Length: 536
Image (cartoon, rainbow, N blue to C red; front, side, top):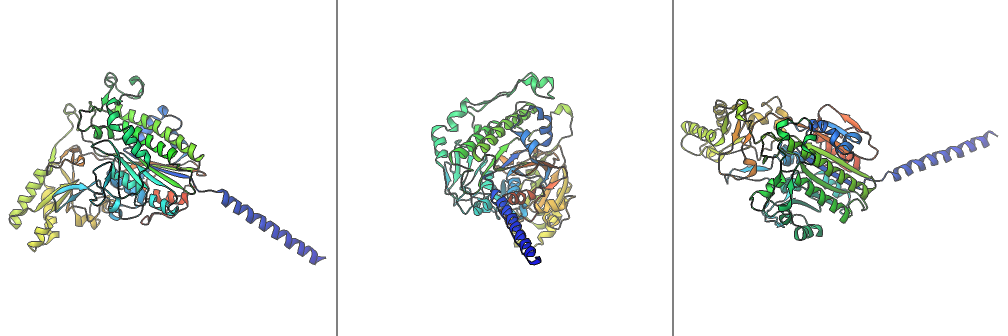
């Protein structure tokens, strides 16, 4: 009798175990991979503006991110970075010292000129004469890993107003990446990528921006009196900006306005619908760049109205985009939106406010330093150039004269430190040794040794850096007024089965790529050493 009971109990146990295993396997099978992942980088997005304008947003744009998403209130970049370097940090999960991208431009010491970081003369442009490739990006990106995980069957595309940001968002393995050409307004790409969908050719031929831009204007979305916290003097003069054919820089002007976000959104939705993104056997990816930078072409120094309007318009763009994603995927998608920190302004405060002000001329500083070094070491061009806070010494001349380069860098730094308007000066040796600032580690990791200068200079806040060292016409060489800005910015993640959650303490921005990789159940980019954020 006991044997029968024992046998019966064994059979029951086997049935129960099999049933449990079956349920587990069923659960795994039902947990399908996301059909589409959309990465969004927004230049200059600030949390304060989101909070101030929350009542003016639609339910499906920023409010959806704030309501349903994982909120990283302070994604920390360590130091201020331009959008290209910041995008590279987001997509690779590592810093410029490793990924190779420290900014939009690098200084060519031999040629004594600035050049785009991703310049590649071996890659021909499509719909442009620009020659770019992501070759200088030294590690893999989350976009690369999505493409690799899909075995080449799934699709990865990137769209951005700026060429180099588009390439960073596309990475090495994308089908293609597209940007708006500054000369002709075409959507352009590079022969580094092999795929140019017919959508692009059709837009450039049938509805080119060059033929539409004359009819486009940027005016307030709402009645001016409806914008919050706006002083009376700004309510009297609603803005209106046009991009007429006679303006030489009309494409550059448009690309810094809220209007460019409409163009990016329109093409993105066209890609989703026409290319069937989110409908393939695996996970597709679409990466986008938007801008909320203060409008340099504003007629009034106080451009709060333009700034608020940009947020409201982008909110509508996001609602339209998110709706298109939902239709294509049935809600089985992952969206991550990451802001980049605000950069220094190109405008100084009006003189009537008596804010302390001065000018730091890079040409004058370089000339004085060169004369000082000539007095010490003999005739020669000891200072080669300047770019974005970095002075470059003539290391060939130093070597030819059998001089101690480190000693000369120290001597040069001490001399520059005595100049008017200088706040801090560090040699590259101090930075690499971690002996620079209270953010020494962040400064060290956010430069790349092959493109860094010999001397790094910070000027006093409120002073204008006059970029007159050479006659460069690069947009990055515009004069700018120094302002100590936050190095953090908000970020959001929306994903199935991920509950809303908020992280208020600063979170290293390098965790975003491995966090998205974990959600997608793929490997992280190959240099992403940070652990994924615990969001479940």
